[in-house]
Length: 150
Image (cartoon, rainbow, N blue to C red; front, side):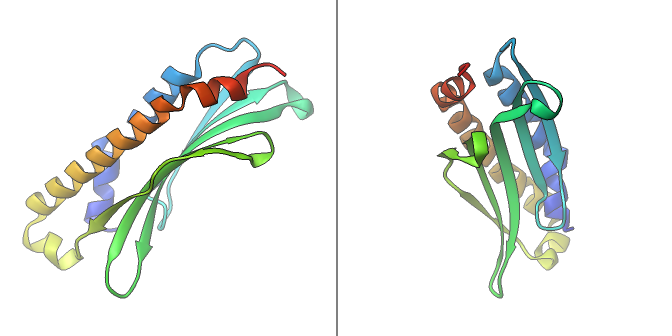
């Protein structure tokens, strides 16, 4: 993974998403929250906050807030694409954020000016994070409706 992609984790982006979802999910007495953060070569991070109602084999996932950072390549350029969505029961899409694209400089550019390039990409990641956090905050009513007892 490139030096620029490694900057995502050092920036604390996943922790920001954890904090915003914890703030939004509230204290539903009949809902248990599960959090998961993973990464791979093409997904520098994938974050999920899942609301589960019930216990054991009868438990139902009633809401998932997911935030992804996808590393997209083509012949011309590399992009980080950051987006979020909210799905309800049975995976029904309830809301989808705008997709934010961040250009990833080639490794040769990073080697010539590592501090400057990484600082610029970190700023872009922080800006994208703020957009996604604001979007998730704006979905409070959607989240509350999805969590309302049936």
